[in-house]
Length: 124
Image (spheres, rainbow, N blue to C red):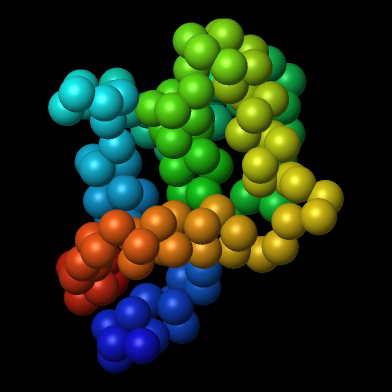
């Protein structure tokens, strides 16, 4: 593990801080190079509140990453609207058979598999 990644993990654990969230979301698209309209952490919180959703296991920017990933991959397809988007975020973050860091670990596995280099020093 690179020293900078180890430092990141010591500070944030297996969770998205603001910089890593922004990096991850900047790489999302809807295919054919179409960029995804992203939502911020505050907008994610507002979305959840609007639909009466409370998260029990959210950390840092994890729910914001999940919301943006869902927008990029599922919204207006298997997730028809914002109400279901909010429920999806709840299902992922509070998955009863999930584990601490599941969202980060799945994302990181994708980055490794696709050969995306992460400048961990930039993420600190």
